[in-house]
Image (cartoon, rainbow, N blue to C red; front, side, top):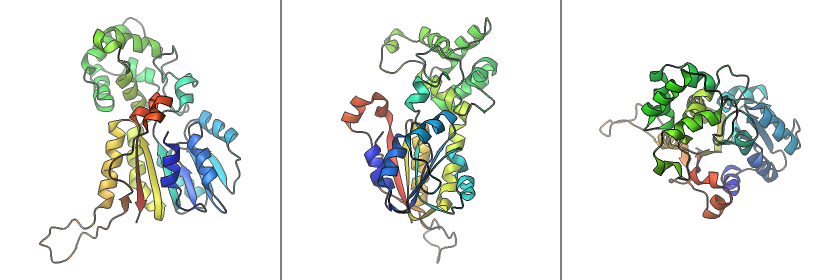
Length: 304
């Protein structure tokens, strides 16, 4: 999504080192690789081993120019250190789900398929969505739906889940979606967004610790980029976008001492400048081609 815009704002030095921290099916990685030149280098990361395999098939992998690694973007400092790199010229995070994960992974990300309630982006992780749905206390599960899904009907959804799981475990994504749909007002059942959307979002975020990983990354990234380096982030819901926006606003701030101080004692200097103040949205043409793009928001900042 927003592929041309991503490349235009990310790749400012074709000979630089760039990181696609969420390679997915490789669409952004391919576009970035085509914009590099000379000693330009691309590092593609994804914690999903299936994504890593897909990207390796799409890109001419070479240790000198392109490498594809199974890793979490929150561990970017360790990854580039292992590669002998101290700082990079650009990093992209696309925080959305790939089409492959939704349609072909078989891990229950989509509520339109009768797949096991897994939702792990990295299948090596221990806990699945089934654990959260079937084993958590009602209070814990309700807190997850409220905090990570911003689901107003969390209490009634959890009550329905608890009643159903007392009879037999909820094993598939379609089972869970049908339960939520069954208690949704008829007026909500025929909207473009499925009534289970926010519950599935909340479970996926909890299973994969998505917000914790994003927070960790945002704390680390200023020290991993060269002056003039670019950070581009695509977010798809307010919980992610709010964190990214707040971090970028905070990075822009200089001295925070009270105005009546004779000189600065905080020592704070700006770390980044935003390339544009408002988040960039996809065009109507792109949304028509890919309806999932409608919720995308792109933010970009330059290291100073």
